[in-house]
Image (tube, rainbow, N blue to C red; front, side):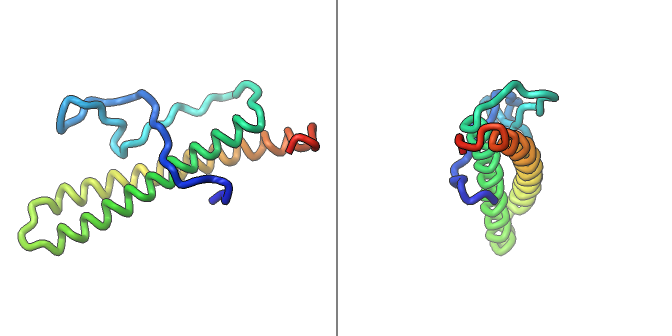
Length: 129
């Protein structure tokens, strides 16, 4: 992962589904929702490219942390005697793992896009970096 990027979590987009557990919004199965990748982006400044890459990495890190917490919770529920929460914990872990995979894929896509564009900026304007 890029050393420049902090481990905050990203803000999900507004695409929400109704929650099965209440009336609040539910962002996809994994808690993450990413906008579709546009075919061709308009020109972005170096700062915008770096910010986009950082946001994708924060989302990935947050998804990794959710998966780790879900795995830990599953381990705790499996060790508890007669725990009815084990099935729910297993479901949470599976959802968190799917979210981590989605976030990782998104990060690598964004890193590739922004890396190409940043290289182009550096070649055309070497003093800006």
